[in-house]
Length: 264
Ligand SMILES: Nc1ncnc2c1ncn2[C@@H]1O[C@H](COP(=O)(O)OP(=O)(O)OP(=O)(O)O)[C@@H](O)[C@H]1O
Ligand SMILES: [Mg+2]
Image (tube, rainbow, N blue to C red):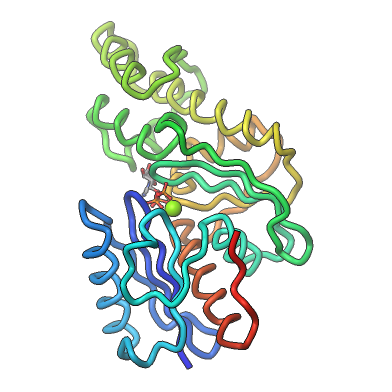
C-alpha cells in the first residue's frame, strides 16, 4: 500500500509518496503565507503525479514547522527524526547530518543503526539560515543561483561584523555603496553562515560521514566553505530539500509495517 511523507517548512513544502519501496511521486512548492493551503496543494499534485487517491494512502507522516496544519496526516514527527531517517536511508554510513533550511539550522548525530543520538538546533534567529541568504541576495540584487556562482569566483572575503540579519543587511548595503565587489561581499556573507554552523558542529562533534540536507545544501559556495572549515567532505543527496519528506515517508512505511513511528 502507498504511504506519504510531507514536510511543511517555513519556505518550502515537499511531499514524497512511496509505493512498494520506490518513490511514486515527489513534489516541492513554496509554502507561502498559508501552510495548510500549501500542504493541500502539494499533496494534490503528488497524488495526481502518482495516480493514487488520498484514501489509498495507508499512512501519512507530517514534519516541518507547519506539520500541525496538515489536515490529512496520521502522525506528526519532528524534522530531526525525519532528516535523520532520510539521510540514513540515502547513505547508511552517514553519522552527522547538517540541515540548513529557511528559518533554522541543525546538526544531527546518528548511530550505525541510523537512530538520532544527539542534535543541536538554532531556531532563535534568522542569521545562519536560508532566510539570511535570501535577504542578502535581495540587498545584492542577485538570485540564489548567481549568489552561488559568484561565491566561487574568489576566496577573499569582506568580513561582515553584524551578528543579526537586519544589521548585517544594512552593513551589506553600505559595503555595496562603498564599491566593494559583490563576490567578496558574498564570501563574507558565506563566512558568517559557516562560522555559525561550525560553532554548532564543534559543540556536538562532527563524525564522518557528513551529509548536508535542506535547501542551503544547494548553495555550492556555502557547501565548499563549510567543507574547508570543518575539514571534511560533505556528501550531498540528489535533492537535499526532499530529505525531510523522504524521511517522513519512510517513517510512514515503518509504521505501516507495524513498527511504531519514533517521535523526539
Ligand atoms: N537552487 C538553490 N540554490 C541555492 N540555495 C537554494 C536553492 N533553493 C533553495 N535554496 C536555499 O534553501 C533555503 C530554503 O531551504 P528549505 O526549503 O530546506 O527550507 P524549509 O524547509 O522551508 O525551512 P525550515 O526547515 O527552516 O522551516 C532558501 O532560503 C535558500 O537559501
Ligand atoms: Mg526544513
